[in-house]
Image (cartoon, rainbow, N blue to C red; front, side, top):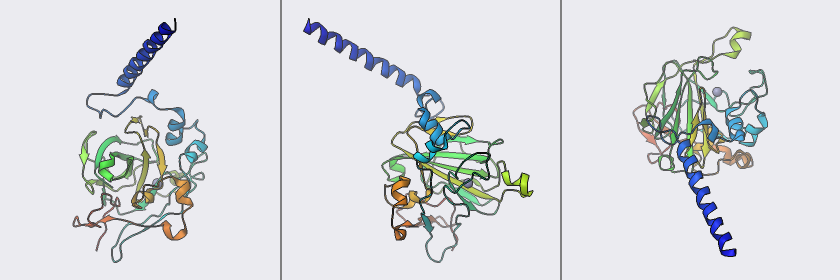
Length: 282
Ligand SMILES: [Zn+2]
């Protein structure tokens, strides 16, 4: 009797593993799109809301995933002209939206046409034309741990392009490779009130995850187990990315020395796998 019980348990476990394997295999989207993409059903609700911030989502889910101010500031190499931030990480955007929300990235203004470059080597996982989005024309890259030297899967988002970048889904890009020209695409909420157009700028955002899998929706990418990252933290040469720990750093450690690419392609420091998404001029 005991023997039989053990046997049936083993059979049960065997079938459970088999079924789980089948579900896992069927969740992966194969073919032309990168194999690590998964359908929406594979993403838990907390992640969908915490990263996607849909209309029915509680903003606290995004805050729990790190969407709050940390106080980090970029410090560029001396003697170079680099493009700094005019709208900081996680500042309140509640006045710009019709509900509570926070800036999910950093903005750097730059003249129309200024090349936006890849912050690290990576793969193009999504392109959005963004007619109905605040972010306009947008590209998202995913970086393996080897691409960045960091023990996470990193996702970088580049938005407000002037025209759709000429890169394909699944294509690998090099560190510092030009993705496309700066523009001001995307719905400009201030225009209705002030009559002003959006200034040309990049919106640059970063997520990190222990999972290589992600879901590509109609207008956004959701990394499985994704967390928000203050984009300045990507350049800290530290693997501590959670906003709570970054916020607790002493003030002196909140100045982040930013590795950059110059217009002639030189990288400072040369060994850096990461660069600011705009090149600097001498
Ligand atoms: Zn922005």
